[in-house]
Image (cartoon, rainbow, N blue to C red; front, side, top):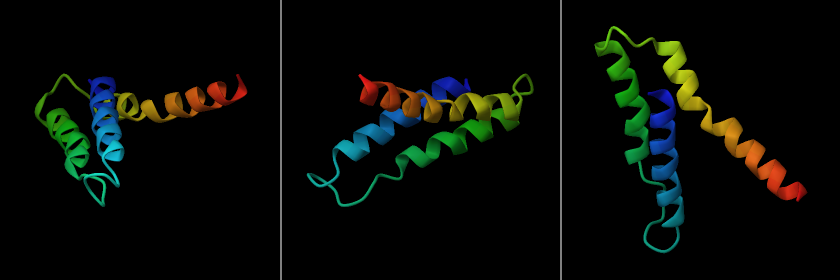
Length: 74
């Protein structure tokens, strides 16, 4: 669930960054709803635990860093 939320967050962030300068002057705040909804879902669903879900959500950051690092070396 956390990884899925991370992918959704990344897609929303990429879309709002892509629109910077052309259609808007600031990054959209809609992507901030993803972590809030994620924490609310964890608090409502007893079968989910907060730490594994948040770690899954945050795994997109090291993946992006590794991707940029390996692309720059090629």
